[in-house]
Length: 99
Image (cartoon, rainbow, N blue to C red; front, top):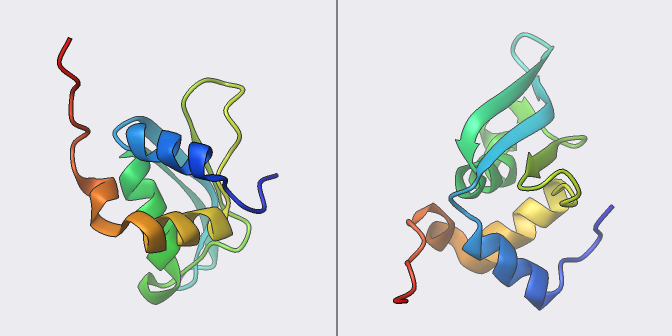
């Protein structure tokens, strides 16, 4: 479990912001049902988890899974920190490097 993302990890997440992600352990407070959110970009997943409480979701136990199977998941505090640090940049397409 990650408690604090280091700068290298934060930069890697920013670079991977377009990668497919899934969010597990999200509870819709209106229906009290657990839901899984998939087929979403990593940047949008981070935005969702960071802002979920105002949207009517409980994400205290949420996990964002992305990338290779051994990539550590992101938790709510990771998403809040990343959203505060990068904000809308997480929603922008990644720039391609000139080869």
